[in-house]
Image 1 (tube, helix red, strand yellow):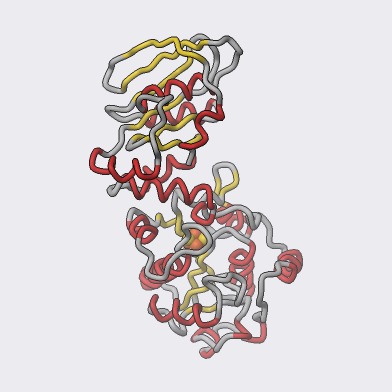
Image 2 (cartoon, rainbow, N blue to C red; image 1 turned 90 degrees about the vertical axis):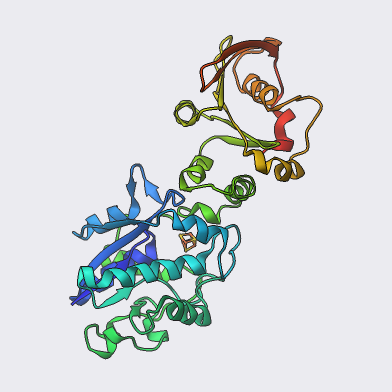
Amino acid sequence: MKAIVLLSGGLDSALALKIIQNSGVEAVPVKFTSPLFSCDSGNRFHATIVADGMGMKLIEIPKGEEFIDLIRHPKHGYGTAINPCIDCHINMLKRAKELMPELGASFLVTGEVLNQRPMSQHRKTLDMIEKEAGVTGLLLRPLSAKLLPPTVAEQNGWIDREQLYAMEGRGRRPQLDLAAKLGVKGFSSPAGGCLLTDRAFASRLRDLFRNNPDANLRDCEILKTGRHYRFGADKIICGKDKTECKILRAWAKPGDWTFDPISDKGALVLLQKGMPDAAGVSQKFSPYDARFVNSFAFAAALASAYCDGDSPTVTISARCKDGETREHTIPRANRNDFKNWKL
Ligand code: SF4
């Protein structure tokens, strides 16, 4: 008997995986990946570390471009930021169900805990998620199973219900105690995880959606890097360290400009051309200021603000991805000058 275990890399799904492994059922850990999920340790997902620690190979499945549509138009709305958790769960369960024949699995397992999350783990919501995903009865939640109706795995005797748990609520103590008892290691901290639950990231993502109707996952990914500013229809990003500056330089597309201070050491600034048809919309959200005549002046001034030294002027080299290069010596700006445009 085999079960697909949805493994995020957090404590609860790691426990669910261990419980299934201990039950004698063959557990197949699957992680749905996205660049908007930062739950990794170095270059490895916590889910990989957890699966490795139990002698299993993690199957990684990208959520893909369709995930952007789901974020933009969630049927069941958002959580505290721009996290469409209910739709996201439904989508993952639907896709996991589709994988069952291919992987020879007879049921699905998640680490969900009843009433742990306000939006997606109430009893009614759990039932609704199962129904919309078409997995009613197929989905076992071992941490709260004794508080939920028996699933096919229990009814058919594939899993002994008595060996399952009756956890509920937001506290993590019972799970941490169980992890220590079962020797489960390598899971992520509760703070790690999905960027869609981060309010600062959500504000950048909303700005992207307003200004670029064709935004794809890659456009969303760059929101993780640097300080972001919206100036009219244009986007300006300032690197925070060497690695980020390198990423931003590589990111420049035809029509974009990069700004490097050459009289002092400093950060690279990327000016991305706006979407022409979105200009009217974005200006509502980002009023112009007389100090900056255009986004080019804004980006150059930003580069002057984020470089070392204290001379009154800074020389900036501006390069267009299309080939044109200019040099400007401008007054050194103050970092506070830009806060009205910061996302
Ligand atoms: S926290 Fe993020 S990955 Fe998890 S269900 Fe919500 S939207 Fe999906």
